[in-house]
Length: 265
Image (cartoon, rainbow, N blue to C red):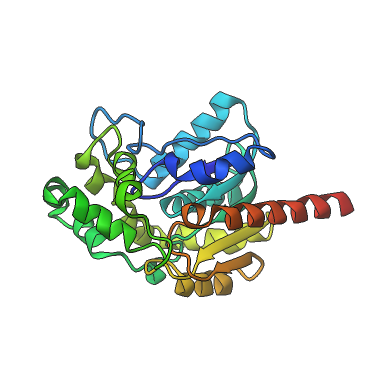
């Protein structure tokens, strides 16, 4: 199983579910380019296509030809590019199934927070340099569910995962994916329903997420009627952290169904 994390953190997000899922899957848990421990010495902007290229290279390096995917946030968008390539018979490995957590797969349903909009604006580099750590973390906590928000020392643990090895200067580079989503909507949005005719797809959605919660789940369900959708009331943008037990249970049930259908066929 290949996991693909989102903005603004890194593969650390998956620590809450990997201990469970590794009992069933060989887990591949990379940091995306410019995130976490993925050094960006040239301070280059890494596009969604760059991220997809990196994952293709990683699969080739590890000798993996077939994967199941679990993605979140920006990771969902990267999967959309990978699916578009697979739909074109132009992907170097095979995606067998895709599970999405909260994310802006349909651009017009994405509701970015003020901090995201500022980072994506012309003043993004300045904003990243001067915003206080506590203020940034407070904004992050607000996309969690009301009763599942990190606080105190737990909230502070997010900062190293957000800053990564490339520091604050990377924040405004990473956020460029929001613009890319709009620019590539004609390629990435149709990739979902087209792929759903060939592989099983599943959305696990924290409905209390102000960015991509219940409204995004409704839109996904209309766009991809073949896909399964599970809604988690009271959970926000990070289901894998807020309710890892529920996420793992849903992942296992989804894959049990895949195995059962495979045996029947």
